[in-house]
Image (cartoon, rainbow, N blue to C red; front, side, top):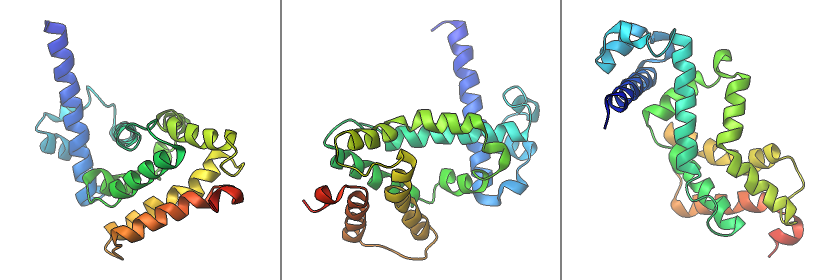
Length: 202
């Protein structure tokens, strides 16, 4: 490995350290309490080092959201082309649910900054569309095959996939606990909710 590769790896590692430290601080203390000095202390770097990677706190939060989005998409959509439409849908749905109910720094911090105006930009929306393109593709394939309702993919997602995260949040907050067979049944109902009538009765 040459000097330039070592330097690039070192920069990438420090940047990731800073992002993970920020995520941990937001998860435990809220976004209001986030300061560059706190991040520096948690990451074990000098405060000035952070500004080599992020110009200010807003950019740090924006980059953190982009980083988490990429990780979530990679996890949820792994092997997304394997199996039938139903198998693919249910695999993604169940992964989404299991991921969402974890009390991880990613989940606990994401809810706090996901709705900030500065992290809901055209850039973020374009990134979300790119990262989750396989999910959009699944819905388009379903419509083209005459299996799914002829709705916009976003509407199909809202009807069938969003319940996975809603249920996960209530579980993560300790409001209710579901048995595995209940989650599997709900997943099946969500799948059937977007099928054409002739398909859902099969």
